[in-house]
Image (tube, rainbow, N blue to C red):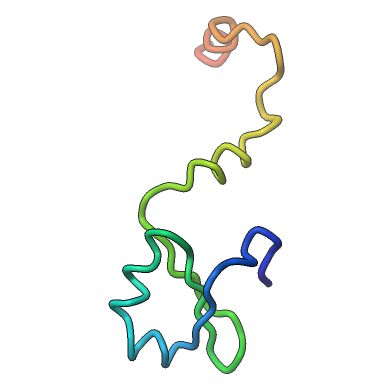
Length: 78
């Protein structure tokens, strides 16, 4: 299922990908390409570079505010 953040993504059939693979491989530098088979989403073609925004969002809330990083490091090393 496509989420709200995926609304501006391109969705193509597997046969369209086979016919124009180079076009879609070039396109993934700027956006993900969703691939369907018989109308069902089966894959996402995405750039190899990390999505820094998505990585940052996934970490949000994991680190407490005003934490002593050195003390946390020492605790983990024990």
